[in-house]
Length: 117
Figure 1: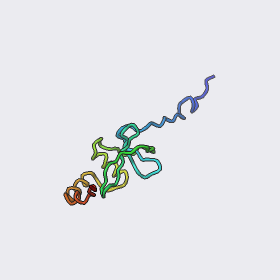
Figure 2 (figure 1 turned 30 degrees about the vertical axis):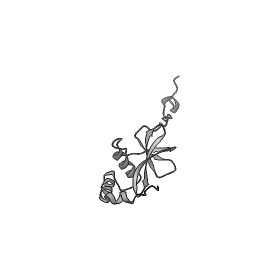
Figure 3 (figure 1 turned 135 degrees about the vertical axis):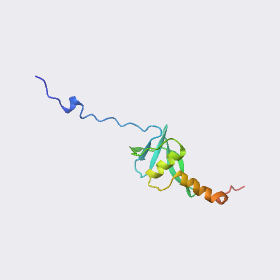
Figure 4 (figure 1 turned 180 degrees about the horizontal axis):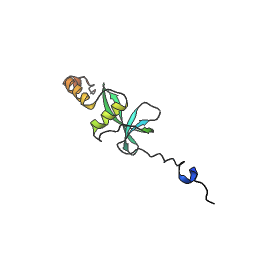
């Protein structure tokens, strides 16, 4: 007599193993509202706010939570910046940051702290 198929024999209980992040993927980060792009070997790009402007910063030790639904268009700086800004809920883009920087011109550079000699 043949047994009826069960969840065990049909594979319905099979849950695929969680894969780690691949280089260039945008992930939400556990315990934060922040997102990061995986660079490989435990290194991530995040959006940071330094000297009154946003920039990409590299960090280690992040724990990915979930793959973001929207992924960067490419691996270029601007693509990563725009994807991180959007995922983190910021209404900025790399192109806008460049225009702001150009508009401030030399005044911004002159305001940067000068090394003490």
